[in-house]
Length: 376
Image (cartoon, rainbow, N blue to C red; front, side, top):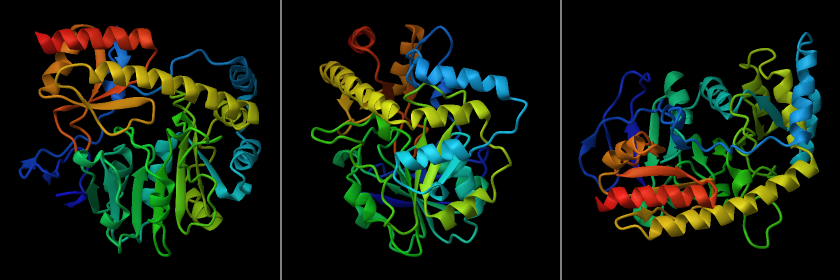
């Protein structure tokens, strides 16, 4: 049942529907799409549930954000930040829409595209896009990628008549980075293709100067909307800043549903600072350190009995499978560690956990505790 297509009736977040996952053959409880990692990160626990980098903010970012606090009596002007983001990606400003985090972008897409007949979300992935579609009254279908295939995408499995397709790259929670060519193959006239690149700046590949497999600079693909977040690498989850890249006419349609002054002055200052060449170079250095830390974590996890690392992790988190993971997660909490449960992601279940990549010392301490739990 590879890449199985699942239909889901439109529901509210409080009204679960039945679903069937690939290879399971039995109905399961509808995943809680409103559950996110911050719900796991109870104060006092070591947080491996949230994928936000916790390092101290550099002065070149902290200074303009702090300075913006002196200008809060003036309404936000998004034009300088919009121009800076556009220049970063080699686009005209009208092909950029700044948003209050990536999550607002998904809401704008769901509310603006009222004429969509067959929206498809490729899972497992971040649940807010589907939640936003459902809340806007859409009937959502799911393409469930197969863990036996490393959660890799085959473009042929997406229905040809789907007029809205949403996929993450790299995908949360699997950490899989899909080839740009496979994603580009999904674009066609009459379809809006939404690629969630919230973690694109965490990726690295040998011989590639920029972000491998990113579509952020592609202006030739019809209906493409790239969703970006600035909150993960730079630890700005509380500031709420992201943006959409796409055709000017399509973004204007999305912007029509956005509240006035949706992005605050400090968030705009952050966006402008992070778009500079120096900031992009800093991102690449962070991605290189992250790759080394991720390799360290994967090696430690792979050495534990009964633990299987999913696919080829490429981002700031790792998805693992182990029998009884739901019980292990509770025991980890008792031992002081928070990890992300997997059963709220469509296509996964209670035997999956997502673990954030941290420094080697933290990963060593975590895997030591996990090993003790598994051997008990």
